[in-house]
Amino acid sequence: MSTSNKDFAALGENPSRKEILANWEPENPVFWEKYGKRIANQNLAVSTWALVLSFVVWTLWATIAAKLNTAGFHFSDAELFTLASLPGLVGATGRLFYTYLPGLLGGRNSTLITTALLLLPTIGLGRALQDTTTSYDTFVLLVAFIGIAGANFSASMANIGFFFPKAHKGLALGINAGVGNLGVSLIYLTAPILLGWNLSSFFGDGLPTANGSIIYLQNVCYFWAVPTLITLVLIWLFMDNLPLPKQSPKSMLSIFGNKHTWLMCWIYTCGFGSFIGFSAALGLLVAKEFPDISFSMAAFLGPFIGAGIRPVGGWLADKLGSGSRVTVIALFVMLAASLVTLMGIQSHNFAMFFSSFLLLFLTTGFINGASFRMIPYIFNNPFHSSLVTGFTAAIAAYGAFIIPKIFGWSYSNYQSVTPAFYILIAFTISTIVITWYFYDRKNSGIRC
Image (cartoon, rainbow, N blue to C red):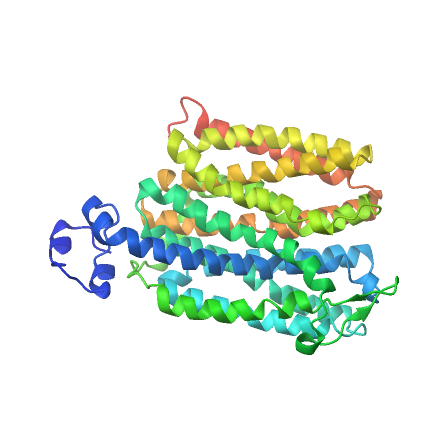
């Protein structure tokens, strides 16, 4: 990727889009204003929508899981929490590989392929949900396959980071990730409507429930195939492949020997891991602790707040010049919110529980946006910064697997979710210490 003024001058007065991409210089303010900003923002817009769609597919099972047994399936609590955790496990593991896709295939090409793959699990699961004799093992395979949608995040973030100058990366990555995360809220918002909407002429018949109503589980899957097809067209027409630098395997693996790679994984896991883990388990948690509460139409609020505030977290970190300071403050608020959430569960006070849970989601948004802004300042090499961004996103995504599993373990062994929250609270405290000591204290040696 060129950074020389000579190459920029060689573009001439009316360079083609191909020539502009071949001489991409986002840190050159003249190039950025004249050519780069428009192309970068166009790629950001399409990439962000594709990421919204990925998060919709990744978390759609969380909106279905709590309804399975009411529709005639017969799964235990442990089986339901295990199914809820599988997309997180596959998505997180896939992110470890998807991080490298933009460099290998190009940003547009990798986004096109990974988005097209979303059609397979959505259509397959839609068919399985129409038959109550579908085995648990079949659901394990199909629900796990949904996890590939979660892997798209790393490829998307690794790609978009190259389009923007360092001064704008916090906001750009915050928009791509934050608006992309809104897919979680979007599926929670639309699922209750789709579950009760008779679209049998398009998607097949529904299933009778115990109270005599009909529920259309497959709608939640089939409906999203249509915007997926439209998105593929948008990607083909409006995204670009930047000529990313080719790196040797040794160079690509060098990030693993840097302690800051692992420290940022820890910090980002506390933010995004909590966001996606709570999103995956929230419906089942409420059904277990507050079965008398009609929650389906309010379930979108937490993910909506967490995702919506994420760009603000990135912007605030850019504005203050310190992502670490924003992260530390948000972590302290997260700790307090976790304690109050647990108190709400123990006192069976839904108002206390839900309001503090919304605050939890709010803090994850600030942490996610601010911590991603830290990475380009810790890793000055743009390529390494991109790889670390993707890798931390991969590790943090295991939260979607770990948190539902912790809840399921806690219920199975203690008939209470309290031990699970003790573990999460201890993790938050450790993250506060790490963030302050390595990045936010006066003599840490790194200003990020």
